[in-house]
Image (tube, rainbow, N blue to C red; front, side, top):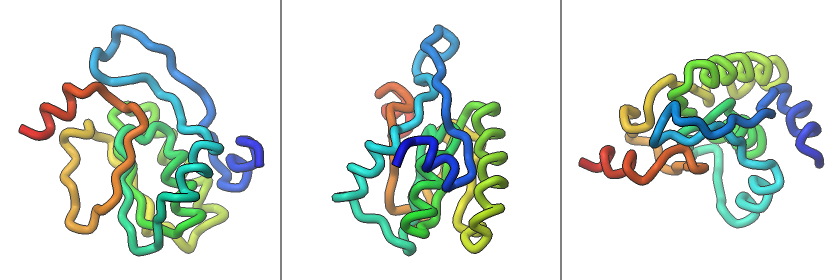
Length: 141
């Protein structure tokens, strides 16, 4: 399938790309993981409906909707950018127009990754180049 086919299947819009600026030194610009990369990843990385997946730097939520649709897993998207967070909420609304059954399994939080409290059930984590190693250092202290 082409990227547009997935977007239509999920009833979302996660296209677009942000360019590098000096706006945030340690936070990287928006770039969604390609659907072909997700297909490749999930051929070997297993996710099921009992998993709780957290996507740090979720952008517009592409991974969240992909996992929820194909694996019915619980998904949390953590996004610091308010505009992208709002895009997640809009995409969630559009997605749920076709997939109401899994509404309670998707949540988005507008927060910095280092401020997200890992839940007891959170067991899988996804990072697609959201920030520099310095943020990991700060989070572990």
